[in-house]
Length: 446
Image (cartoon, rainbow, N blue to C red; front, side, top):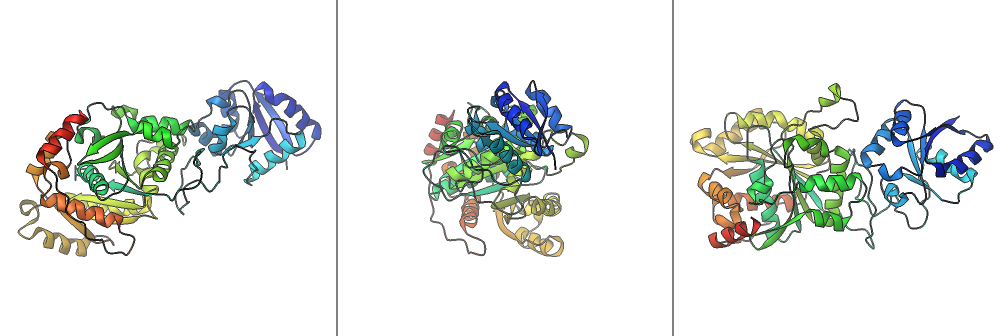
């Protein structure tokens, strides 16, 4: 069987001449002049493998996805940004490789067999990567890691809710704060491509689209632990520190949050922090694939990717006659997007005026009659004064309303998140804050 190969870079020419003299299955069909020509050849089905040298510095994870979609395996000649591309999953061809050895590497890469990486390069399937979970796809591959050894992966908690402002961001921000108060090394990621508002909720006026910066580094294969910590903002809340990747500064920047890059950021965050809380957008449809090219960015990709890589999904719905049906209708889509995650259903804004004289009982009865499989595990009371005060101060409830019932519910939610599947949530000790501490913390964040 013939294996057609396209090349890029004059440094590949001596090796290519040697491969052609072998008259074996590996055949060079085009020597491309630039990366655009290489991608066009890959998309046209002309080749099964691409060997690059000069120009490798321009290849990102997104471009590598385009090659993979075209069924093309990427090989890079040693000395041409090979460590970074090896971390993204490319096969490295040693600089002094003989033509026969290079041809064998091409055959292995095309067949999908792991190729031996030269000493000093990251193994794309090495043990340093996050443990794979069935059903999780869209990953751009593990990134190079300078850590001395593998770390146990932390949990990823996605906070999702249907359209209609059920309180996703409020729950995500305060859940992250409560997890930090319980001793978790916590990161908070704003992945909402429609209404990013984590920075505003925390009173952060110096907003710099941290998630977009991290995705850019991940797309280039340069997102290691130090880079992620530099990109994330350290925010002091109630005496603890949250690492926050702020959301987009403008909604039209959503193409920067590609699925492969978001997946790489979440994988890295799970390795660096104990718990990563992700504020997701409401939309879970994948219908853009019907109207766009398959490699085009999708606005809902960030939410879908966060759910796909999550260990726990907190589904939040409003406790009224519109919010509950929306939550019921959306849960099957959540379950399909996050097949391996534990689902925690929380009903927010519980109040008599919207759900009757016994709101919790009424919603439970309606849920048992019309709701999907998972039961409601938590009810969060509606306390507009405490929530408005926290929002005005740019603080969390632990700082401005430590004794409020809604804050107690969020503490219970944090305990549910920390509990394993089938385990009963451990009782959490009360942590008291002060109004002065909240206002000082919010002032410092500004």
